[in-house]
Structures are given as C-alpha cells and as structure tokens.
Image (cartoon, rainbow, N blue to C red; front, side, top):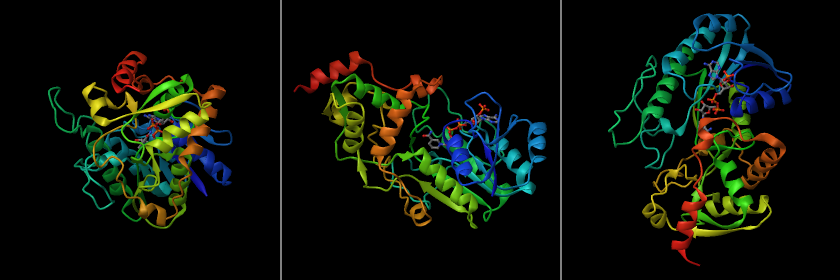
Length: 343
Ligand SMILES: NC(=O)c1ccc[n+]([C@@H]2O[C@H](COP(=O)([O-])OP(=O)(O)OC[C@H]3O[C@@H](n4cnc5c(N)ncnc54)[C@H](OP(=O)(O)O)[C@@H]3O)[C@@H](O)[C@H]2O)c1
C-alpha cells in the first residue's frame, strides 16, 4: 500500500504514519514542517494545504492508494475541499478524521452514526458558524466547520471512496492537549486529589494508536461510510481511569470523590479544569458498534495511562501548545473544594 498522511508529524497523524510503516507500507507525509517530526522511514513533502501551488506540487508526488487526513482540526471546509479535489485523481480513497462535535446532539444526547449532523456547507470559509461574543447558546462553531469538512470530503471523493471517522476524546503518548498529562501530573504530586463526579460514571476515551490502526484498516478497505471511533459504552469508568493514573504514578494520591453539584457550585470549568469531567447526559453515550463490527479494537484505558506516563517521564512533554495551558485546576482552588468536601 502507498499512503499519504496529511499531517503525519504530530499526535494522531504521527501515530498513523508510524503504524503504516510498521505494516510495511510506503508512507508520504505532508505538513509545513512546524510541528513535530515524521517517523523515520516516511517521505516528507513540506507545504501548506491552504496554498493551491503546494497542493499541486503534492499531487505531483502521487499516486497513492489512500489519503488519511489528520491535519484538519482548524481547517476551513473550503480548504479541505480544495485539498481533496487536488488529490482526487491521484488517490484511491480518502479517510477524513472528523469528530463527534459534528453531531448537533453532542454532548447532550446519545448518538449513533444516524444522528443529525450540524449544518456546514462544503465550501464554507473559516467564518462560517462563528458566534457573537454575547452568545450563550451551544458552541457549534467547531462542529459546523468539521461537518462542512466532512461534506467537502464526500463531495470530492464520493460516498464510496470517502470514509469519515468521528473520534471523541483521543488520549495516549504524544497528547499535546494536556488532558491525561494533567491528571498524571496531579496524581504524581500525591495527597488527596479531587476525583470528579461518580466513580461508576462510564467514559469513552480512545487511545491514539487504536484510532490510527482503524484509520489505516479503513484506508485499505473497499467501502465508504462514517464511523464513531470511541471506546465501547459501558466498558470503563471514571473510577477505572483515575485509579489507573494513581497506580501508574506510584500510588501516593488518594481519590476524594466530589459530586457534580459541589464542583458546579464552586464554578469548576467542565472539560478543562478537571479534564474529562462533564455533566451533560450525552458526553459518553456515543455508540461505536458499527466501528467495532468493522474491526475497531480498543486497548484497556490502563495501558493508555501507563504508556502516556512513560512518554511523559521520558521527556515527551510539556509540549509548547496553547491548549496544554488550558487544562487543570489550581492547587488553591482544589484545596478549597477538598475542604468543603470534608473527610
Ligand atoms: N485530539 C483529540 O482529542 C481529537 C478528538 C477528536 C477529533 N480529533 C481530530 O483528529 C485530527 C488530528 O488531530 P491532531 O491533534 O493529531 O492534529 P492537528 O493539530 O489537527 O494537525 C496537526 C498536523 O497537521 C499539520 N498541519 C497543520 N496545518 C497545516 C497546513 N496548513 N498545511 C499542512 N499541514 C498542516 C501539522 O504540521 P505543521 O504544523 O508542521 O504543518 C501537524 O502535522 C484532527 O482532525 C482533529 O480534529 C482530535
């Protein structure tokens, strides 16, 4: 197999390129050369996917059996459309990594692949869906952009040759967002630490390496379609996750379970101050049986936790990325909540 990875130097794209090389595939990666580095053995083409000349030069390096597009977290639909059109005649298939944010019902409702996708035309620019500063409704900007990018992919490649992957939260070695790294560093500090919500609350993060395997399996398959790419509902809990963080970091921290209401009363920011904690009913109700039937296998969360801790200890972080700093609660605020919780 000859494969083109858009991205390929960073987190998910790097994991895709690495796995493809381990399969013995011929790998080309395309990025600007600003973030990270491609795995050894991959052929790198530098360029900006928003620049038509760079896309034309990239297309000249083809053909490929498939493209895996991992570099579009902040890419306007029209740029995804231009890129997919530039590659359509030199690539057999296109696997686009979208997100569960593309659903109108996330994070409030249970979801399947048949749930409604947000509006967002395939040729929308980066302003599509922007919200006024005083907007206090749901923040659908990112989801609308990704929904438009999904449509851009199928517009260029057609439904049979386009595969849409919708992961939820991706964790694992190389995570630059700072969610699991923050929990690990907090657990490593030891002492009583807030454990948010309830220990038996199910969660569905997925390991970056498992997303990569599934993306490549779909790149090599012979059908199009959309898949939710998350761990199975009801398999692992917040308690399993935080216990794994404590164990991986030496076992000195003690979990102090703080009910949702107490955290909300103290103004704790969901999703960021205590990463993965969110009270909305649909956050972790994403059905992934279609992907499992197509071969998705999710490793235990404890393995993701241990390997991410090993990566951090080996100098893998902190990564210079603005999102990293968004995560975590201050020790002062945590102490106030722990005091309110009592013993
Ligand atoms: N992280 C999560 O929890 C999560 C959850 C759901 C879905 N996703 C989706 O997963 C995908 C992968 O996310 P990610 O965080 O691994 O990567 P990302 O931040 O979306 O992409 C980074 C990669 O794209 C390259 N890149 C960025 N802009 C470029 C441009 N204009 N031209 C060419 N290359 C460019 C970067 O290299 P250079 O900077 O060197 O160009 C880097 O290799 C995204 O589509 C994201 O929306 C992520």
